Image (cartoon, rainbow, N blue to C red):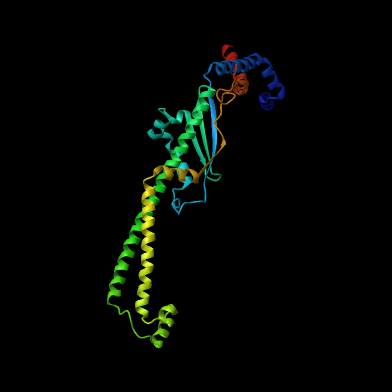
Length: 306
């Protein structure tokens, strides 16, 4: 039993002898796989890749708060990434399947938008990278423009509501002024009580504090109405000028191209040298494995033949 167990044990010498006897098979598979993959890599159509890196941010300057509460720049960038499989982006890029030639990825932590374009030639890859950059910029500006216009309409609606409230208040005060006496004897006790309630001392000590107070409120409301009417006129005129709003949005949107579109020097796929090395290693492993399998099968065939 011990001699039988010892005969089944393989030493390093046995492994070496197996590899030596099967060296032609191992070398043949290694070189054959490497040469085949190298030839296929040379004949395979080349693909060139151009990548654009864009930094996105919004300036802190705004015009009368019109650029406040705009859509999140992070959300817009991620929305553009999600548009890769839509007909809308396909039409803008002029291809049937954008994911075949274009890729977009947004790094929220660093605020960077990565745009990748592929082409059959270096020039085609560079042109497609320029195209997707323009489409991405237009998408961001268009959505921010819609947000700015929504802010303008909201501000205009609020100004009209404030104007209506001020006009109603002015009518009420004018009605009270018609019935209020414009002359009365000054009363020190009434003046002291009004001052104690927070009334302006100059108003409280007038001949008729109530009439004076109503007159001041009337003047204040007239001034407020004039300001609101001017604001409504400005907002209405601004809404009629989308070019001006677009220019304002373009100034607020800071698109810094860190890596511009460029023609690559070498193709990204295939890579003959890398593929050949990988194929050679895989062929070597497969050859060694096949050598041991063949060595294990051969004695059994010999025994069956005997």
